[in-house]
Picture (cartoon, rainbow, N blue to C red):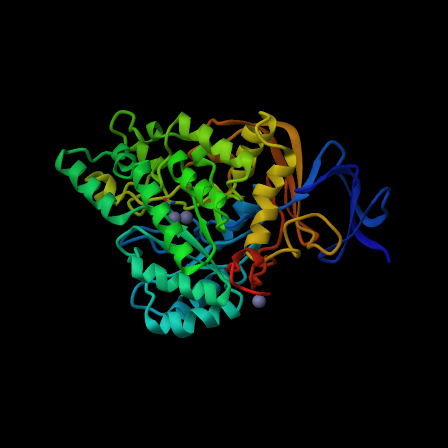
Amino acid sequence: MELDLAIVGGTVVTASDTIACDVGILGDKIVTLGRELKAKRVIDASGLLVMPGGIDSHVHIAQPSGPEVTMADDFASATASAAAGGNTMVLPFALQQRGTSLRAAVEEYRREAEGECYVDTAFHLIISDPTPEVLGQELPALIKDGYTSFKIFMTYDDLVLRDREILDVFDVARREGALVMVHAEGYDAIRYMTERLEREGKTSSYYHAVSRPEIVEREATHRAISHAELVDVPVMIVHVSGREAMEQIRWAQTRGLKVYAETCPQYITLTADDLRDLNMDMSGAKYVCSPPPRDAESQEAIWEGLRNGIFQTFSSDHCPFLFNSPAGKLNPKSRTSFRWVPNGIPGVETRLPILFSEGVVKGRISLNRFVELTSTNHAKLYGLYPKKGSIGVGFDADIVLWDPERKETIRQDILHHGSDYTPWEGFEVTGWPVMTLLRGKVVSNAGAIVGEKGRGQILARELSTYARSSQHAS
Ligand code: URP
Ligand code: ZN
Ligand code: ZN
Ligand code: ZN
């Protein structure tokens, strides 16, 4: 059998090994690892790392975000940006709006994504209205159809679930073996803080961070963990921002509970001070996301958790808005209070360079841990393993060729996302993706998107073994 493609002369890095060898590809798949492989086409990877393509299991694309506000990416721009940043798969959310069917939401997102994606895509669900119909029929049926994970919110007017609703949703997840992702910030405490700050005239973007301090995140994290323990269901606490929430997770993990955790680039590189406006220009709004970035001590705490295994995944929480637009961060109401600034920042393209540079190059984490945190664990936790998430015989040929020595300065004008700014403007990194291959075909090369739009598939996922309750026998 003649190989279609061989990637030769590079250093293959997986979550467990770092080995100088060639990768042989036939069709969509990796079929051999070896030396001096021959193929119809050969890519020289000398001096480069050959790693599984990044999987970003937390991105928001084309999600309704309140009246008059629109997200800055559609599926084409978000997945092009992902590919340029070394990713071969993203997991966005299909959001159920209150009073609507979950199934209808899923169909609508699928229609929007169909034929538009440059990398593979699979949807999580967001459940905002857990009616008996949704919990009894729609959700179990969707889980069987391959939507094997979903997110719930403990805050936001349009999304927040009451404790009893959380327990009922957890119960469905336990029965069906799905993984629940939890946005853990306490609704009532945030409301209280927001109203107090507004009464004091403290309405600029910076007070977004003051209105949702670590205590609020810690309380909700503890409550989510307690409910999960009561129901006996694993949970994933997403976008953990600092020590307070992390210590709740460590406490749960030490007690043997299946509590998983995710963190993001903003929590190792940004601080609440970034939310301060320079000369009343609203520039702080560029950094408004939830939970908010904290301080230098919190960043150190997050590194500790990345090193010692408290965190399984490092995702972007890509949630792109235009800055300079009435449909984005500068909508008319956002000038009256931080409460109206859309929450979220773009980051699908910069996730890997930031973790590589700040983590691997600065000696805080190993190369293998980098791969685990950016690809392998995402595949394992969300039912994509062993199809995705590693370099080995039988895996999809989803590969990033990485120059570990290349120095770049992150700038808006080199990125491919739909947003009009990056929170990391001027941030210097060492290490950069030079080529991304999706199932054996080049999708991004030297900063240019060369793949075919629509080659990215919308995938169904398996149940994850990590989502099994402790009582589940098989
Ligand atoms: O501020 C954020 N993170 N926006 C995205 C939505 C979410 O809660 O993940
Ligand atoms: Zn969230
Ligand atoms: Zn998010
Ligand atoms: Zn079973």
